[in-house]
Length: 311
Image 1: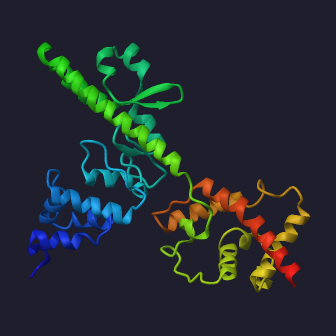
Image 2 (image 1 turned 45 degrees about the vertical axis):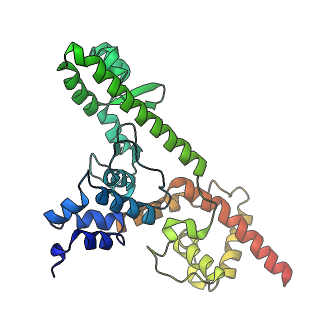
Image 3 (image 1 turned 30 degrees about the vertical axis):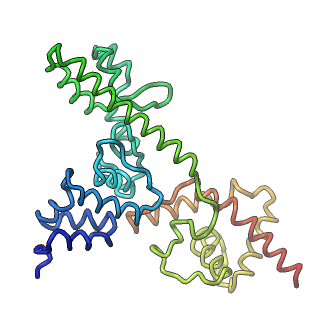
């Protein structure tokens, strides 16, 4: 039996084991698979995407906004796919008010300041007040495409239907704004996870298939791979982790002012850029790199001093 001839029930069971990325790839194989995976009104389709999200994106347990399909919700959450506007793989933000994921440059190019709508373009206040917006600085910004589409509807309405349309738009807008606020509060509540080697994406086994069973081997590899290795003038003579730590402690003692501001932040950023060029999917963030720099070295210092005292 060909896979395209699978009955829907069997196809659904098969999709349970696939990640969102695999589901998107599968939906482009043929028209039948696209019908299975992209049907907005199908309960089975919604369950496929929901189960995949909960299984492979475990932190994203919040349901989608009212009216948004699970497929579109998952697509927005996949920030590693880059900007939905310019299609470039770069740092992006999800603007839930507009239901779009974009980079900073595209946000600037596709939003309009409220005063520009009211003073320059002369949009009526009753129309602007029912449209979703995002706060940036001290101003309110609206998505230009949404404004243009909604205003074309607004102009074609009769007086009898105008107020009903405005009320419906207001409900949708308030729902999106409320959801965006809940997402923001949830992200602030979760924050960054406690520091651990396993929480760092750049050290995960998905990118570097290594056995980190031994703690000192882990330190050796991390230092050689990231910050110390490029700054050691004679790294070939560093044979083990203890020597490596001693080398770094001695360097810190000789440079009394060198703590956080000079501990290879530039090298960390260069590592990030190099990894992004080799692997399109990277989630290395500057705060996380700063956390490594400020947390790892003091811990190694204390550990080595403890080992020396024990000997």
